[in-house]
Amino acid sequence: DDNRIKNHIDPVYGSKEPKELIPLDIDRLRIKLLKIKSPGTVKNILELLRRIINFGVKKNLCTGANFTIEMPRVNNIKTEDLTPEQLSKLMETINQESDIQSATFMKMVLFTGMRRSELFRLKWKDIDFNKEFIHLLDPKGGSDQVIPLNNAARELLKDYPKEKSEFVFPGRGGKQRTDIKRQVNRIKDKAELPKEFRALHGLRHVYASMLASSGQVDMYTLQRLL
Image (cartoon, rainbow, N blue to C red; front, top):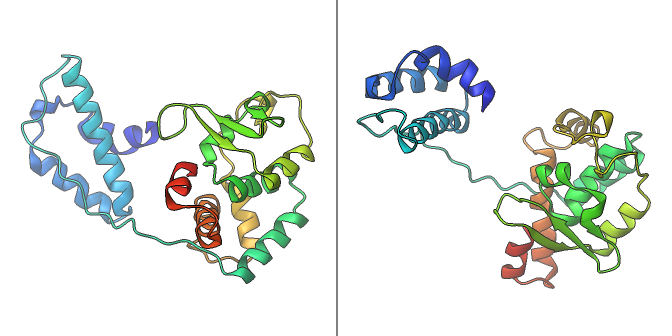
């Protein structure tokens, strides 16, 4: 959000109040951005602008725009899955990876379906090896949640070396990590997976696909796990 404000919103609208905006202002920005950005990115930028305006109106700091900001159409329907051969090659590549943290991170996504942000926030105290569950703090869905600690994830974490940090996957200085894109993409490329396959989000799809095809988990349970 900070980058979107600095690079796209502030240079165009920084000196204006919402009431000064006209639809043509938004149209010009949308058309300009669509030449260099994906519709999804443009939608995120315009949605951020709308959120800022709504916040100002809600706090009685300004008068809102007198029109509705239209969003570009986005087709987010994308099925990401791996063939058994691709998954086998990926697991082989992960097992040979010298970066233990990144390799374990990818396996945790595949074994639990956890989001990247949830794994960044995961602390050792959130894992109950005795009762076999993982406590998710402030997940995307809102309130805290509990998910099962299955056998694969439990064995993975038991063998995973602990660092001097409360976080399972710490960043520099033992603090919460905020990015792992470069590392997991390197592993994805080594495994020769399709370029459009998103290393972490795609593994969540694979996790869901494997559970759904197993016939051992009903769709309601699968939805709750995700």
